[in-house]
Amino acid sequence: MSQNNISEIKKGVFFILFALLAIWAYQVFIRDKIEDAGKCLKCVILKSEGRKGGITTTVQYKYKGVVYLNTLSTKSKLDIGKEYFIKILPGNPEAIIFFEEILIPDCLVGIESPSEGWKVIPSCN
Image (tube, rainbow, N blue to C red; front, side):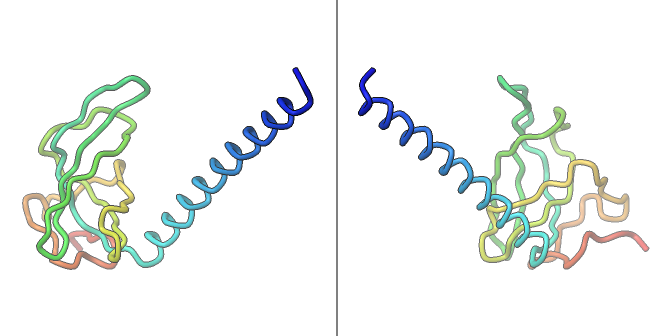
């Protein structure tokens, strides 16, 4: 291999590493924004199936009268029709945090989220 080829390979590897770092930093930034300024909503599971490399789950939720579909990775296969909490970014409702471990309280099952969501995950108390 010539010195030029090695230099090009090094540039390519550096670019890929920089791109991965930028993607990771953006995801951390968005997650922090959702945690700080996000609105809590309920979502319903439309589909949950095993794929190569994990479980892909499709959820549906409503924010300000608009219905959204979002596909995400979950730890386990989830029951179709079951409800979960999510937190969205009001300026970008497709950016969500999915709370797989938090169960919907019985008092909220089947009840629609407020149009603009809750400031915190609600409880029955």
